[in-house]
Image 1: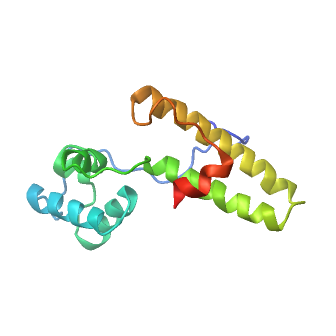
Image 2 (image 1 turned 180 degrees about the vertical axis):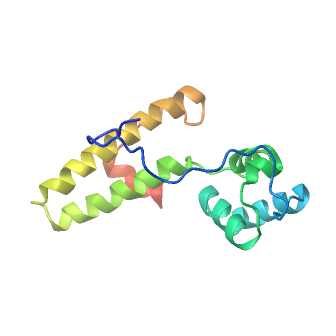
Length: 151
């Protein structure tokens, strides 16, 4: 699949192995893995960070194979939610960094374009989350309120 704002195809890179069952050497105790996920989430880690920590420290290469569902679904089942989805929050943090950079470097045209591309991704993602009911229909992206949303 082609990249959104560039000419690259993006075909190279590592891929997960196609497997339907967890490895024999991995930790496959469902209750223990769920307890670890809830503890790490309460400690302030994001979903992606939780998956990386489980992989590196606790020998759980793929939570989905062990639990049968994603980390976000497990957290939702345990009533642990965030105000914004993780991917959207990462884009908003990136936009905030670009805005701060452009306040100090007003002639940086390359980063001004990157900011507009980042903001278009945020708006596109917000339409998706409004359709799915994750965000309220009245939510809009406003550059002047971005710092309040991220912090």
